Amino acid sequence: MRRALVVAVALATAFAETAGASPAVAASPQTAAAPVADDPFAGAWAEEELERAVKGPLEALDKGDITVAEQRVEQLLTAAASEPAERVRLMTAWAIALMIHADKGDPLPWLRRAAAEARTAWPADSRLRAMALSDYGTFEVEQLGAAASAEAEAALVEALEINRARLGPGHVEALATSIALGELRGQPGRTGGNPERIAEAARLFEVLLTADPVTGEDDLAPFFLDWTRMLIANGQPDAACAVLDKLPALEGRLKLNLRFIALRTGLALRDAGYARQAASLISDEIPAPGKPDPRQQCSG
Image (tube, rainbow, N blue to C red):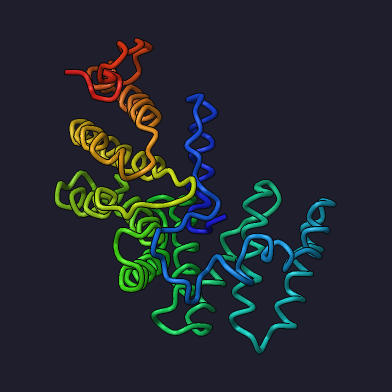
């Protein structure tokens, strides 16, 4: 699973359970022309290799013994004391295991440790370094919202700089980091209703409009939902509607479940008290054959 998107996958799955649709975020999205050097998803970093790396701790975790499981992880880390890159890999693998077994342990301390060691494991322009930093910052933002630490924000800023320089701003790895940073800076507790701060956060989402075409089963719907929900939470329902208006032009280039995005945005608008804008988005009206779907644009 692409580690910077673990949270987005989990959120999208939760949305789909209530919306009756699946956004189908890929396990391993890849842009058409992505470099392969220090690829965080190949070789020892492939999903199956990460699982194999923590097989012993996972066996203990499956038996319900988190204490023994984490003791085994520490033993693996001690054995890799002279190999910082391997230590980061082990901590990342264990954090992913805890995300999957969400009720058995907290991934955040492991991701924080991995991010700290990544700075010594790889050079300043490494994709592996960027991924460790992005994993940590993204997960902390999703867990703590506006209370996320300055450390997490700095990790996201550094990861974004690396990914944009190495891969370009429209690459899915850069997008994932940019959206996480936008989520953090767009928290109402951070913006305080200040239009300039809201606009600053929105700019971190606007890179979605120039996203690189992606292969596989990628669906960027969770990212667009993060954007519209950020605007709604900051009292800007019409701005959220304006985002929806931009999506049909992207459909041929990106895989987007437009109805899913519109419905979830409509529900968010309704729940926030914006019934007028939400009405058409949450309508159960069936569009006429060959006609534009009126349920993909806000009412009025």
